[in-house]
Image (cartoon, rainbow, N blue to C red):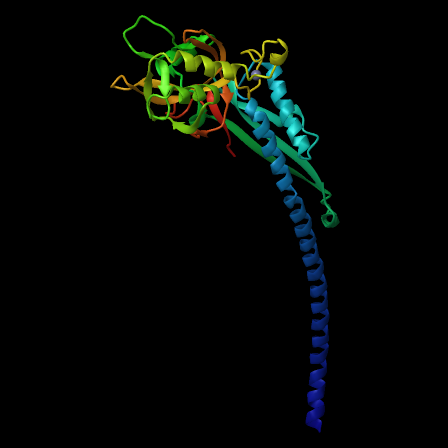
Length: 342
Ligand SMILES: [Zn+2]
């Protein structure tokens, strides 16, 4: 029995100690709970905030992609720069971000005096709920998108007339790009080549050729493709095809006696704009090799087979090299793809 009491006495401090330990554990649990709840609160707040940046990214992408189609733009052309920036602001607003300013839109990558890249930054302030406990009242979140021009190396809708690489390079170098002859008519030379190309390689086919002039070739043409020269002047189909395309312009008063699209004022979707291959002559003098693409606004034709137009720098559909304008080996003749680059 004594032994038992001894043991009991021994047990009392032990028990007290245990009770104290139990209290400590309670405190630890309580502190941990607060800590865990705090972390959870932060995670929920931050999670919700970052989830909402998806919308921000979408708005930034839409803004660069839509306004970037107006590139390239001369660095000194304030009117067009404002038009591009306002277009970006407008598209961000359509996607739910209404307080973009011109400072949120940055034009860059200057080549030959023109901006070839656009960056849009969409900022947002997200107020916190739970995280306020820790003194975090709001978070500033920023998302940006960048779109740049890259020369087209493959496209559809090309017309069967074009220019030699040597000629267009000389014209670009001397800035002599208006009222360019895209197809020759009657000439005194010995060659039977008048600038008409056979895009499908089947030979002949005046009716195909007329449709290619008026609507563009439906297939794709790539840099490096070898095209047959169409022998002969093709006066009739050239004239008809040009006429169909030219009279299809509905912009700038074309339907009411106005001039329609001209090189100083044009709608980028106008049928008067043609995509032409830029080529070099093949060794056999019967073929040409595609070196790149350019865009021209058709201006005039004669009834003996001449076509003239003025050069445009513009964005079109098709595939691009991915290179920046002025970089890499791909030829750049002013026809570009707009690609998201970040
Ligand atoms: Zn037009």
